[in-house]
Image (cartoon, rainbow, N blue to C red; front, side, top):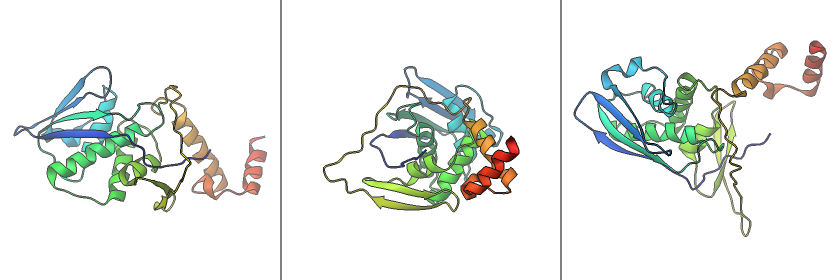
Length: 218
């Protein structure tokens, strides 16, 4: 399977500011129904996953933000299709992190931002995702593709001079959800295979390694 990370003309926007209280209030107007969460800023370190499901991406990012957060009000809007495989969860995480940077004045390197957002997704929604989605959302550039070495985490912007050609992105309307799907199981199976081969990941596997693994399983 080949992935092609590139910037898309969709946005997740968060507006808000301090409210001079100890309460963090976040309103989402992303779906068909508005939804809100609230929690004390003094209890950020004790935040836990819960419902609604979108709140886990917000709470996870806030919990992993390196600077203390005071009470604020915020509203989230987005036109990134949810469940379409276009990184809507990473867009939400990076948007929350960027909002907190603007709110607190605490700036961080984009690579570290992406890694903390990935950590948030691991810990709160419980999705063992890779780094690609957070990388492209945090560092994507218009008219460029993004070449990522997921082992070294080195990334390179590749100019896209398409001329008369276009890249067509279509929405099949088949819902894509990593939480509760077979994705974590597949990740675990790949890691198990790598462990049996004595490799940190299957990226380093050669054909003869896979043949040996096949013999072990038969």
